[in-house]
Amino acid sequence: MTGLVGGQHRQPLSDELFELTEGYREILALLDGPAAMRRIVATVPTVCGADTAWVGEPEGPDEIVLRHPLNVRTDRVDGLVVPVGCGLGGQVLAERTPKWVRDYQHAQSITHHFKSVVEAEGMTSMIAVPMVHEDRLLGVLYGSNRYAASYDDRATQLFEQAAARAAAAVVVAERARHAAEIAVHEERRRVALDLHDTVGAMLFTIGAGIRRLAEELPPGDALQGRLSDLEQQTVEAAAALRTSLHALNAPPDRIAGCVALRGDCRAFQERTGIIARLITVTDVPPLPPAHVRALVAAAREALLNVEKHAQAQSVVVSVFAGRGGVTVRIADDGVGLPTGNTSEGLGMQAMSERLARVGGRLSVGRNEDGGVTVQAWVPA
Image 1 (cartoon, rainbow, N blue to C red):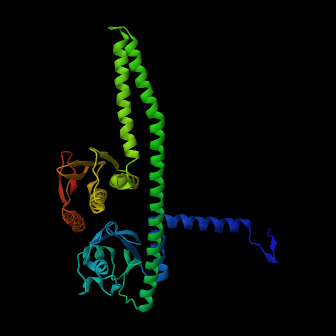
Image 2: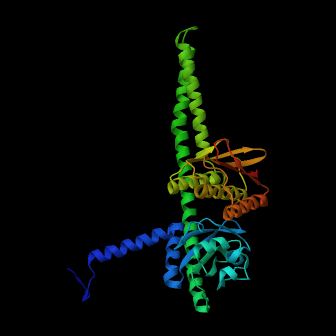
Image 3: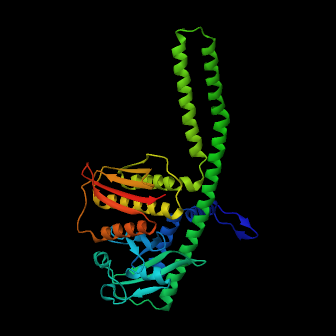
């Protein structure tokens, strides 16, 4: 039954609730960068008339990583690293203007680093459009058809509009994430202060009481040894508390790398079912943001290779300081180094080049479990 408002039939309450729920979901999607990007990519086939679509997300100024592929036939698009100048997207990354080709396989205007991937997907024509917001390149939106197609001004404009929506979604998600990080850090500091004022004070009182009791006992009393053990345990507990308080109160730039790696390990395990552990072997000194990004990007590429090729049961990501810098080591127990995989080879090369730009280096080799160990090092 419907009511009347101002002489008009009011829509059923269930319909209003559905609209409110959908609006709420859209707002949540905007605050979640990957979810927002997937929603936008999903509109490309209908709105822009493409068979397939995906985005390239920046990994520093010189490369993008392809994400959120839609209607693809293989798993080779997702995670593919595209350096500046390579292929169609690499040209867009360099020039920041829309580019398209009618026949990717035979186009003379682009490099053919990714020809095997395009062949495997059965793609023919392709368009790539920059996602720009206030002069910031936030990614590249791709579309492709499995037949020879020309992208006229109208088609290009539709892709540019979709790219603008994608860029706006990235900005909204970034701002939401930044606000959340600040809130989390402030809450961590509050918890650290509370622990210092309560647990820290309690441990101090307990330690003082134990020492006072020990002083009141006659020399050689049997309880002396027990009190000494309790005092030592109290000292160790206080030291552990100080370490925890230091970590809770650490500034964001000091913990950003480990936080990112922990999130990557968790996402990897949830996505693949492969056990992934992060071990912080030593205290990690502060690093410049570019160095942190290079280490995190190297770890992500290594995890992606484990996912695609290793057939592993587990992977361990270790972080430690030494040799004047910080090392991230990714070790799996899989089948060892694959051969003949050009996309992985390109990814490893891009990873190595990115580390080299900040004075770092990369090494890859077989480990004692028969799997692969990747080590990325940057100077501190």
